[in-house]
Every structure is written in C-alpha cells, then in structure tokens.
Length: 384
Image (cartoon, rainbow, N blue to C red):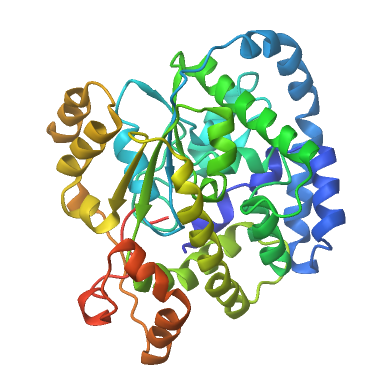
C-alpha cells in the first residue's frame, strides 16, 4: 500500500457516535499506543460532527422515514475475496438501482448536511483506485454498506479490522449473530432499513443494490426485512480465497487497526471461520424462495461479464438488462482487461490445509481439488 493511500484516508469511525465509540472500546479495547493518533482523529470527527448529526435527524428525519423502498432489493453476498466488488461495480451502472457510495458510508448520520464539504474532503483524500485492487473509487462510486453500518452499530465486521485481537468474537457476533439478543437484532434491522431508506431518499431511487459479504450470515434476517429480496451469491475457488487472505489483512489493518495485529493469527481465524459461515449459508439458502437466488462464479464473471450478468438478470427477473449492457459495452465503458491483480501462490502445506479444512466447499461449489487447475491468479480485480 502506498503511503499516500495509507495516510490520507480518515478512519471509518470518524463518522460514528460517542455511544458507539464507548461501547466498542469497552467491549474490545484497549487501543494500543502506536494508534493513538487514530483515536484522536476518531474523537475529533465524533464530537465535531455532533451538531450536524442532530440537525440532520431533525431536518430530514420524517422525510427519510416516509421514504418507500422497493420490496425486492438485490443483495450481493458470498465469502470475502469472491468477487463482490466487481459485481457491484458493474451492476451499479444500471440506473434502476440506488446503492451506497463512499459519501454515504463515511458519514451515514450527517452526509446530507455536510455534503459540499464532505465531497471536497473525500475528493482530496481518496485515491482514484481502491487500496486492495485497481477498481475505480470515487465519492459517488459504489461502496459496500457494511462500512456505513460500522458507523451506526456494534454489529459490523469492520470492527474486527480495528480490534483484531477480538476478530473471531466480532465475526461470530456481527456476521453469524451468535449471542445477539432480540433487542440488539431489532435495533440492527431498524438501523439497516433506515440506512437504505436514506440512500433511496437521497438518490431518488427506491430499489437498493447492496454489496455486503457479511450478509452471507444474515440471510434469514434479510428475508424477514424483505421477503421478496433477490440474492446474488458470488463464489470463488477456495484455494484462491485462502491465498487472498494475508494480503487482505495487511491492507485492512494498515487502514483501520487500533491494536497491533497478528496477521498469522488472523489468517488462522479465517481458516476456522470460513467453514462455519459457509455451512450456515448452505443451510439458510433453502429459505430463499425459487427465483430469488442466482449463483455466480467469480471466474465466470471475470471472463464473461456481460453474458454472466445477462444470465443473472434473467434468473432473478430483473428488468431492462439492455440498459446496463449498453453502458458496459459503450466506448469508454468498463475496461476489465486493464484492471491489475497480483499473483499469490500457496505452498504444498497450505494447499493441504485448505483441502483438509475447506474440502466440503470444493464439492459444494463445484471446484476441483487439484490446485494446478486453479492457482494461475490468486488475487484479481474486485475480489473482496
């Protein structure tokens, strides 16, 4: 990661609230001394934006609450490093969808009030491409909504990147929803629905397109909120998913850590948590009604994006694919061939570890256990 990318991005908790910040430190702290400057930055944002949060709630709260949502939002799910960002980036070009942007996610409680200043700051501080790959990034570009939820609730996987010593505990609470009380779950649903209403109100579009890998563990709850929701499940060869973990952790901890990370332990946590989440998803996917779920291989999407999207739109009965196809194939449209990834290879011991711990997923997802068929490129554009 370049120094510019590392240093110019504000910590995501800059846009959070005093009660959330106190709760996180009480549950997962303390913060290590090398990260005290990040604490100062977070506290500056929390307290300086307090008047704007109050004003925005008073000024626009009723309009947001009265905003109607399309009954069938589209959720892009699947384990991390499986191609969600690429799918999101492509589908966000479809004008029928509203989706969270960097602006929405950075300041979910007050973006409408501070929008001109926030846009100016984000343009100056954001790089033109994402830290983990070469997908374009901009203030209005598509951003996963888990980042916005990290500013609103403790039930967000992003807090595991800030408090890596508690990553497994945070994953189990925020993604698997283990030990979460009925009141906490009700509050999470309320916050999430209000976030989507606010995005719909701000964009003037009622149908939401969400990219959120953490939602892979929340299928039941999303169906309770939106019984007609559509799901796109992205999956990728498990060898490649594992190979992408260490680079992912190094990038995320450089950006967000408030505790000194143990990268080896975080990768080990992933080894244990991948099968737990995937087995939960394989069980809960049976809850999704017929015609509301499409499965997509990342390899297929990368090789044939337009034909893959055409199939997804047909399977989910999404209208007017021609509008999206026109945008994707127009001169100057998305140039996937110019997006750079980076090669990562696995040792024979790592390959054996993946086969032993994640073997069930190869069969369930239709991949070969032979690593020579799958390791030619282990980290490629939009793979988170």
